[in-house]
Length: 112
Length: 154
Image 1 (cartoon, rainbow over the protein chains, first blue to last red):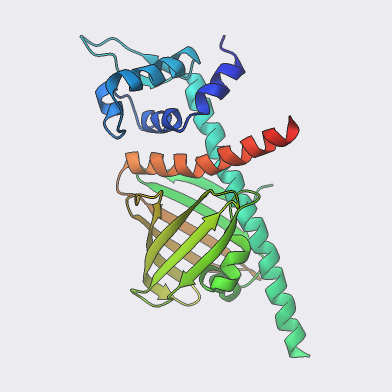
Image 2 (cartoon, rainbow over the protein chains, first blue to last red):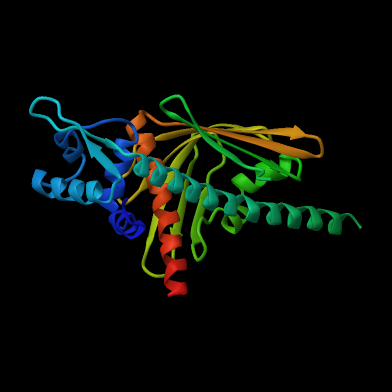
């Protein structure tokens, strides 16, 4: 069992969110994860440890490599993010509904 | 019942559909007229778009600038590739954070649907990694909004 608190604080860091986004496209090694960031491998490993302790990612052993992938909780966190993005988009389109209603009103007003 | 759908397709696409209770002409104008865009394309609570420039012709450029009024902000620039009033817009865009993200190629269709409009927006990203990063960036703003709400509750 991992606490919701640990997951929430793990997600509070933008680098860790970006790591999760990268892992959403598939398994990756520490080297592959470090590549897009201007960070040393130990710094990335530290972030990976936080994500692992929070239960968001898991590691596999493959020879000398330890590829990481999203754990079930990590996938759920990504789903929640997608839901938040959906909400922001929905808020935009709800506003657009009001703008369109206003345009229609203006058009009718001009017709007399 | 939610009127909007948002889903990924294949490795590189994002599909958004939404119905509106206004004809395609009005919905098309609300996507191209800066004064109208500034009223709705805002994202989370508290964000505004002080700069909105659209050169609505093929090859024309556009620029959207957002701010949260607390020093935070970013902008999008892009070019229109095709404009078919009032049915279709094809454009490319990139976010500046401040480094530009890879181009997002977007086709937006407005089809008459009864007295209203069915909008279909199809985004194409260069690869799966870029798509994941883009969705994560969108989520950044969602995250920020949720943290702001959380602050309000504490």
